[in-house]
Length: 114
Length: 112
Image 1 (spheres, rainbow over the protein chains, first blue to last red):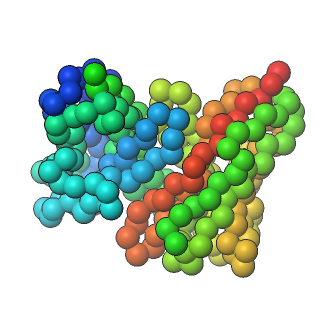
Image 2: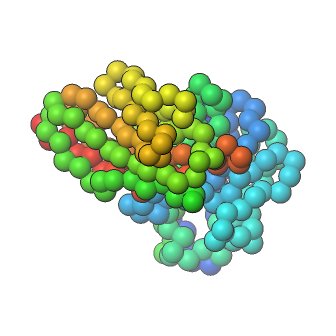
C-alpha cells in the first residue's frame, strides 16, 4: 500500500496566521483527500484534490480558508488560513490504494491555535 | 443520505471477550465498506473491508458481517485483547465520487 509522509506532525500557531501542511506519497495517485478530525470526533472530508484541476470542496469548507495545491501526482498541500482557535484539529491526508489496499492515511498534523 | 451511523459510542469488553460494533447507512450507491483502527496520536489504519456482494469477511480475529437488505454492517473482534483498545471507525465509499464517509467512531477499551 502507499506510504504517506505528512509534515509537520504538530504545530502551535497564533491566531490570524496561516499554516501549510504537506503530504508526500511514495507512488503516483490520481486522487488525494484532505480530512479534518476535531478533538474526540470523527473524520470530516474537507476536499478532494486531483492533479491538474481545482480541488473540490465539501459543504462547509471554502477555498479561501483551506486553499489546496496539487502540483503533481505524488504531492499536495493544504493551507489553513487566518486561523482561529476553532481550527485546532488534526488534519489528515489520504489516498486511495486500489482495491486491495483501500484508503491509506498519513499520520496527521495536530494543529493548536492560540 | 450521506451519513453512516455507528454504535455504540464507547464499549468496554473483558479480555478474551467479543467486541461488536455496528454501522448503518442509507445510500445504496455506497460500494465499499472499510473499518479503521486509530490509536491516539496516529492516523487511522485500515483494519478490514468488505464489498456489498459478500455477506461476511474474516481476517484473523476480525470479522465483518454485511447485511445488504438491512443496509447494516458490523465489526466483530474475537478474543479481544488489551492491545485492541483504540477508536474504531466504520466508513462507506460512494462509488460515484470515491469519497469515504466515516461513522462517528467507537472507543473500545479491553480490560485485562
